[in-house]
Length: 370
Image 1 (cartoon, rainbow, N blue to C red):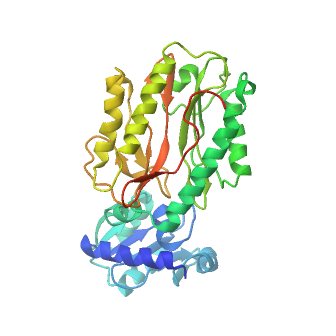
Image 2: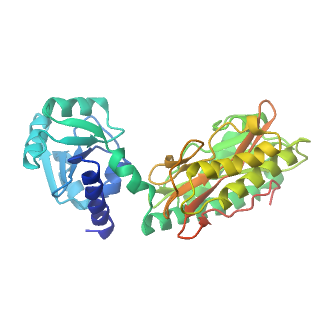
Image 3: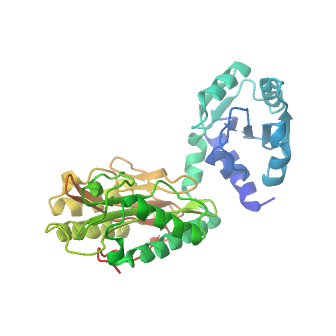
């Protein structure tokens, strides 16, 4: 039994008691993966993990998953139901065994309505909340194994970013889609399990759309190109953005905009340390961009937490007064977007350390090809 999952379960039990909840009820999700080690996509069958505040976790799973979960999960109590059975009978029996009939249960934040409604039918005396109330504070502070996986994912993103930028003039004439395919091929060849999200290659005016993705526009000389990509490594994602010009002379205003974003990104990273608030990091980056006169063109938060999910807490945004703690990992990614012209974004992942911060990305941040 991997100690990491046992320790997470112990911490989860303490959190459940702290928020006056009796158990978590999880379904296939990153929450379930975090506590059990078992990864699966949601399906139409009832596959649930009960994690009580007192006692050992219990899986309720279809017969076809019984052996697989026993092999792949750290949970030892795995109870199965067969097609043709009513799975809610087993759900009710487990609730009885764990004394949860009238308890307060925190269900997975992403659980399908089908299963939440079934839980309410099976346990009409129970009350319900969301699992994030207990799990979000735990998942925000990464343990050593998680940070190391994120570090490896960051190194892979760095390596591929350098390789892609070395294409230089050879990238001119490629479509965004073709370049995205090249990026994803190299991520896979470097050990990435799968892309962490839809690779962004935003050339010219498409770069002014923060979540453009990639299309059939061909990269031209002088085009600023926003490159935002990463891959999962050991279950954790990379996420890095650079804005580059592969060849030719960029628009007249581009160098000034890039300088503003680069200085803002540096200010945001340097503001990170234990005890400061998430919103203070956002403010540090935003004030630089405002000083250049582009405040209205910085149209999103400065960053988001990264872990088993590419987007999770803490969110680096105005109004978030959560204090940063060692082990928190998040992006710092200010951007400026000039509609119809171009956009600039620079992003690194950062982990809060005991006395400051560590960047998990370190590929060149200049806009010039390498």
